[in-house]
Length: 224
Ligand SMILES: [Zn+2]
Ligand SMILES: [Zn+2]
Image (tube, rainbow, N blue to C red; front, side, top):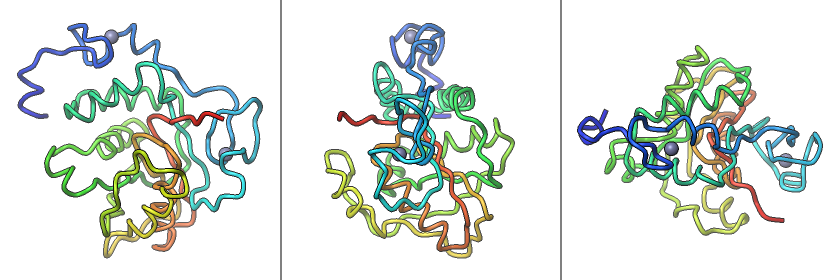
């Protein structure tokens, strides 16, 4: 836990009310991603489908993706505060939320999208890993750091879908000596285009993994 976090009084990351890192009222109101989904990429759909407009025709290296929240309402504020302030205590709360919405993945281990080196070092906090460690506890699965970054892509924010795929292609590889189990769940904080998850899943599969399921805290939903 960061020193600052110990010194500061607990405040709700959404409304600022003192007392807890996420107050009951705000927690209740966070928009859950439930209802019918695309079986493959987890996009919300009007009825259950095997593929949706967003993922049909795309080559995706993971078998499925699920997210607990929609990246809207107070969710960007909560995730922003969590990441920027390195609120480790909030990771446990958010993991509980994920486990309430997303069924446990049918895998042998959890791993996470690796941190971008300089950014992780400057903050000493890696949100996707913090979430993965908490989910490993909740789901009683081992956490294995299986991936690393190679090269340093630009930030994905602000890039078009096609650019996102190109930007992250080849940016991740299995750690030297890592031997992933046959089924792995990849944890990320925000699922946007799925490009990063797909490249990570591809790296895991090249290292011998047969099936990758993706679980993210929140999912950005595109306007159509
Ligand atoms: Zn609140
Ligand atoms: Zn889809």
